[in-house]
Length: 310
Ligand SMILES: [Zn+2]
Figure 1 (cartoon, rainbow, N blue to C red):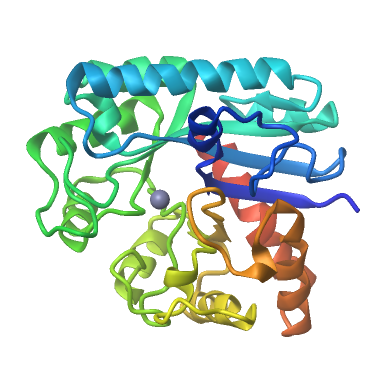
Figure 2: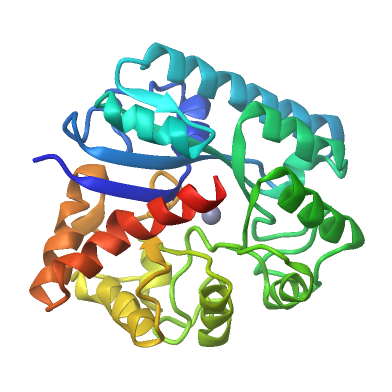
């Protein structure tokens, strides 16, 4: 059965490159042959740049993974197209193909140079997660407590100017508050859940969720077991849907999305792979959500956002 799915985050590109596996027909969460052709599947593929890379090493790491991404897109052009604007996204679906949006996870990729924002934009990057869990030139992640740096503020302004969407997943609370003071455009959390439901610093507080909502951003639900439940043991999909119901109660109907964290996280059996995402749709419908709201979460909210900002 074909399906509509817009997923804001996976780490598959970096893992494939690392393990020398193809994007199509592998044993990973994301496999280009997992969904039937004709599905309107848009996937943000992140190049994950670890905190430890600096300067030329960071640039080199990005470039190596970017070359792999381009190679995989070219090899699979019969099935998926890299898209950098909304018209290209529509074109991919019109041709019966999937759509790929290039992202960077970890602002270390910028190597502390504002010109790198322009460079990665030229490469087709449209989303950038400011930090990972540690510190980089822009700010600090959820394992630390410093806010955005001066370079981080400048980079955000440059990203907004050039059309790269700011992603706050992994950013710590201080950095989030700093961003709220300087951001002039909507920002998103590609793969973060609710801290009220599961108390983990990678999850969003209600206040943060509402700040994203009020600015017209997006929040993608993460399938990582430790962000779903504090004990990390989840045998039932209702553990994840609890986050969705909580955010809906906070007025999240138009900003909730999916951000699987596929190939970057340990995922409970019920969602352990792209071909199981249908389980989430079925669970939400069984729990009483309307087709309209489920379609918003799976596809429509992200589609509308990218129509406006991609
Ligand atoms: Zn992540």
